[in-house]
Image (cartoon, rainbow, N blue to C red; front, top):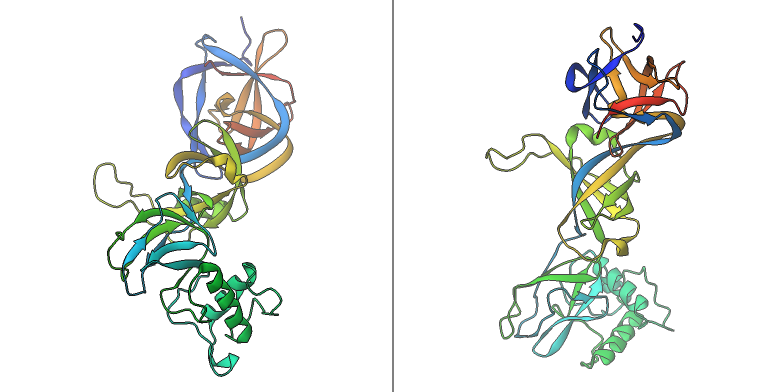
Length: 363
């Protein structure tokens, strides 16, 4: 007969006490009983660095959403293919056989860019973007043009003439409205609204950037537990994992649209994740992925599976040790950090040591 210190784990009946961990997921410990140990398995207390992570669903795709509207008068004579990528200095589409060029900048083109009587006559953020693009593309070599200048001076005019010569159009040194499109980055074409032979004055296309990104809808209550630069692991649809970091944490909570039975009423925030190795994520767009978000790390601690925990009738928790002679002993423990992704928990206790064998539910 086993002595009174021995406990047997009931692997089928949940105990009424539960406990919370840092990101709010609740685990249910198992009740102690004297039904016998049928169905039990064992695990080992290990010493390691433990990372607290929560696993949530996300969507893998591309960053940014840009709509391009035609500002030139004429007929659309060339359009890009859906899925193609247009970079700075390349032709985005054509109007009346003339190229409409993509240049990088966050301020949309809204006027003709041409020199005045002096450089200070024509200034602005759009001019600064033009100067930066001319320098980056090499058309300002030897002209001493400052890429950060917001003035349209003689160097800008000469650089524009060089650009126009390369494009095979009239070298006027001026860019009329509709000849260039400013977008923040290279454009990955996702839809084309215009038609060949149609009017150039309207919606032309929609695009994203080429930067890979994962969007996660996270419970708003967990916002304080994550921050920019936190490490994450993204599990792709093919089962492979790749690292990433949180790039942005939303500040506005929203609930699911619609009032159907499946609609969520839990407030959510959007967390943006940037993959560390974008090429490893492939080219899938709007693909479902799992994201393990790292929220804390503790080095050199004792760790057991969460399923090894027992809730004690008098409060607190314990693990059931299996001694070398086969006897079972209840070892009280104090809980620390949880790793939801691996189902592990940090434990401490005066009678606890690495390599002890503890009972867990059989798989």
